[in-house]
Image 1 (cartoon, one colour):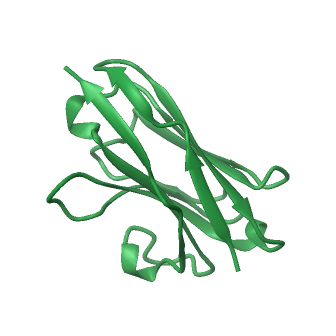
Image 2 (cartoon, rainbow, N blue to C red):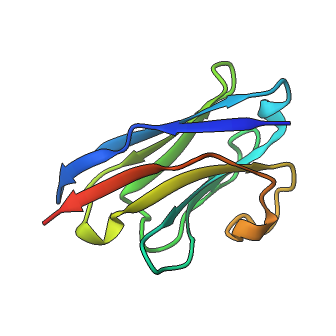
Length: 124
């Protein structure tokens, strides 16, 4: 069992940066694949980034590649999402999620655990 709590969201101007954190509880956190997703109003949940349990594999969609960076500190049971060069279209609720499998990391339905989300608003 893993519980996830996101933090770090807020309001930022276009071109600015934010760092989101996802704090986890559970003894087996280090064995989980962690993903970040976002969901804007009236839109489907969208894949943002994912990292394998040991950090050996990292995935980004083209929409955030080069601007967002996922990292994890297993000792602190925390995953981070550094977001730079933010755009108004990045506005959404951001969620972290965890699962034991390492495949299909961009598919929300494959994740077992979810946080409550944190709002990111980018003004133009």
